[in-house]
Image (tube, rainbow, N blue to C red; front, side, top):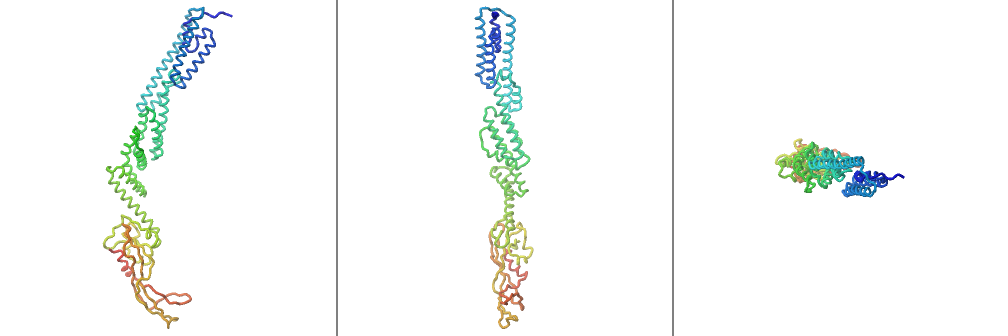
Length: 460
């Protein structure tokens, strides 16, 4: 076998300083060279993948150990020589490795500074762009330096999702989306350093208030007002709610009134009065509450009237008030007549109305009954000539339930009696099979008689 070539200790040292085991190759220690390359690869992979400083320290120790071990082995060789070509080549490689590592490390610090500045300025777009400059070389030379930027990018992606969710909440008036968006903001805010980027997303959403739909704005601002405080940047939402909610509540109430959603409209007006008693729109809200209440009452009364089929159903069984009804005053009051209409239909048109909104009274008329006896007369026919029929004529008694519509209270009288003619010369009646006579009869009424009987009902 050939004797080993003379070794140059400085060339060996510089060769191992490349972390590629070149010094061992110069010594023809193939196994050591392979171990050096494998160890370097493992430590670089651990450093890049974990971004832990301890692996960087281990890599430096591995580098120093390779240099020292190469020097030790080369100095033990009895045959040494100065090989300028080897020294120049290994020096160039070592400098290239060290300078590349230093430059990449310095660039990593520059990238990290730009990421930090962008995050502190609330500019996620710039932070993501800066972190996008990182490549595997930066991670090999400075993984612990650039690794925090990955967290910034991840937080920014989450904030992008929150911004999209909040924008959808504004378009739809969805408090569910609003809650999800704020949940994401709160989660990102819990991670140190994200206050300004969270503020940017939040301000963009809040600057979009009020939305074009006042009812959507009212729903969103109510959620913001009720979410409570967390003593953080998200509390800015309460100020936005106080700024935009009053107008939204009135605007939504007005819109709901046009949609006949009176109950919801009143709720919005009342919410302004409860939450913002000193707002300049309180008079408008009070008017809205009053109008909505009247509309609700009138709608309820109309429903009862529509479901009235007799004196013991609908409004007549469950009277309700309509505060906007005309006052029950002295003189003749217009009435809404319900129930049996046989006689009430004969009343003057100026006394009657079919519109609950125009009635001062609601009069429920029952079926006619026998009132006071007026006169008893004898009648005979061909079959009862020697046994006359005794027929008593009675006034027409109409049971009444009279209500003042404005208050829903029941008034007198409880009945009226209609007078008329009695004992006509001829009394016509029908009979079947057996003739038992005509029986008791009502007096014959006239429109004037009906009017005289009902006059005390509608006059005060």
